[in-house]
Structures are given as C-alpha cells and as structure tokens.
Length: 460
Image (cartoon, rainbow, N blue to C red):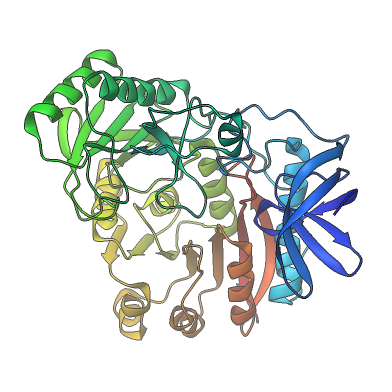
C-alpha cells in the first residue's frame, strides 16, 4: 500500500494507520509518517504490516541512539520523543479503565516519568549462540559470515534466534564491556558457543546486575561441567573486572535457560549485592527479583505508601510480596505487615531483608496465592486494614479476588505492570470498592510498558 499516513500509536508498541475501513498495525512508525507499507498479515477488519519505504518522515521523529533499533525489538519507541512516550502511556492507562473496568474513576495524576531514560536498568540478561541471527540488511549485502558466534538478545518470537549486540544503552556501559570481554575470551580460547537447537556448547547465558550502590553481580551460565574451562573463564573475568563484587557461575545442562532449580556457585566476592532505599538495605541474590529500574522503584513504592495512608496502627497484607521490598518499605509505618509470595526462595530473601533492616513486625509466607490466602488464613492472622497487591502481568486469580472481597479491607492499593488486567480486576472489586486515585509510573523508557498504582476504598 502506497502513501499510507500513520495517525496514532496502538497496542504492543505498534503505530496505527487506517486505510479505507481497515486498521493497519505497523511497528516502528510514528504519527505523521507517510510510508509505503507491505502487509504481512491480513484479517477481515485489520492487518499487520511493515514500512517498506518512508515517503515522508514525521516531524516528531528522533534519531534512535541504538544501532540495533528495529531488529532487537527491545526499545520499540526510541524514535519517539520521551514526552510523547509518556503521553501514550498515560492514555494507555486511561483507555484500559474506560474500556475494560467501566467504573467511575477520578482524573488520572500526571504520569511520573523516569528521571534517567538511558542506562536505567540494573539487570540485563544475554544469550550466547553459535548461530548468530542475520538481519535482512546482512543477507542483502551478499557478504559471507563464516563466524556466526554471538552474544546478545533473542529476536522476538524466536527462541533460537539470537541477535549479536555491539552496545546496549539500557544499562551502565560496564555491562557491555563484561559481555564483549567474555565473548572475545570465548573466541580466543575456543570455548564453544551454545547451539540452542542442538542443546550443546559451553558459553550459554550471562546475567549482569549493577546496583545504584555501585555493587556488581555477574552470573555466568555454562552448558558443560568442565572444571578446567570454568576455572579459566571465571579467573579471567575476575582479573579483568575487579569491580565485580559478586561473581557466580551455574552449570546448566537442561533444555531451557531457567536457573530457578539450579544452584549458582559463588566464585568470588559476596553472595549478594545490595540496593538502598530510604536507608533500607535490600539484599539481592542471583535468583532474587528486584524492580529493574531502581530509582523509579522508589517512586513507585512511595506512591503505594502514600495511597495506603498508614498511621502506624494498621495490619497490612502485602500480596505477591516477592522479596519483601514493599513490605519492608512500609513496615515502619504499620503495626504489622504480612507478606505472601509463590516463590519460596523469594520469601527467604524477604525474611533476610526484614531482619537485616531490624524490622520485627513482618511475617512472610510462601505458597500459591489462591491456596494460601483463604478464610482460615485471615482468621488466624487477622482481618487486614489495608491490602497491597502487586500481581504478575496476568493479574489476580478469581479466587484471590473473592477472598479479598470477603476480607473487606478498608483500602486496597493495587500496583500493576499491566493496566488491562488491572482494569479487569477493578471491575470485579467494584462490587464493594470505589476507585479513588490513579497514578501511572514509567519504569521502562523507550518501551510501551507502563506501571500503574490505584487506590480502592471500601464503599460505606
């Protein structure tokens, strides 16, 4: 289709155009673009396509910083001004409440933008591959690529397609230097890069955490329990980067990259790194969950605490507590905090975090939320005055919603990374609760993702 005018942005970070009666979703477009678009998929009322030729660029377009833009898939909005990104995220929250929740809600507070829009991530994960994904430009060039060893990111929708990354701007540049050093060391020392389809090879995955405190954790995953090669690699990393404070390796011979059921081995340094938040220290191990934008996490949790309006006398339930970051953050303002989380290791971290910060008014319990949180649990531990919920993207199970409605806390503070499922749950909770405040928070600049905090109060 020629001379298609792109008019808006849509779900999943795509741009949107209307041609006759058909909506066309187009990645990496900008409102105001005029482009020749090739359709990749066509349904009755909509189509998906990509820009073959940009006829006239939108006035709002900015030059993407990253050379991997449009291929990596990680930062789909690099070409859009940050203020416009924030406007789109605010609208995403508003639309979800209007279309899905369909309950009365107050005017949204202006979205809290990230003070840092580059190098804001404290955690990055990379994959090593023996068969680098070749871009369309590389294929068209006619050039030969005899060495296809790569260290980078999976292409969206392709478990075995790894794009080699030169430089990522989402984490401190130390992360790039560590990845490139290991990649080069592997090539110089004939360490086999992992073949994802054949499931063999030595260099497999790499996780790098860089805390705002300056502490650095590196977890190197290898696909073979070869002690000599492990020692050679780990000693080289330790010597090259003395700033690494926690250096681990894990041997993974499974058919997937998950290390939840594996035991990381501490090679050098401390078994954890720490983040600081209002004087609280949070210990983060190789398996721990922590919000990946540390500074925005503080703003997110501050909103949740403000919405809770704690006076010091409240019993608070923190559902989906993770490693207890929110629970510990609000404990000094509450009589008691009870945290529940599915992952047992996370609960152990939560207990350690509470103890390390001298908080003796927290209790943590592990188990599936819909099984742990029931009438008997509430009878034993007390009816909460406030519930803080921070579920995964899928939102809350219907059984959990029913227990919350039966428990009837005075306030519910709902933190979500998915405004659509949050809006769905708000509609269910509307049986007894009114929506009183809405505060979007941007945790991930240059992506379409947005966090949202809402306050629900029990109807009198």
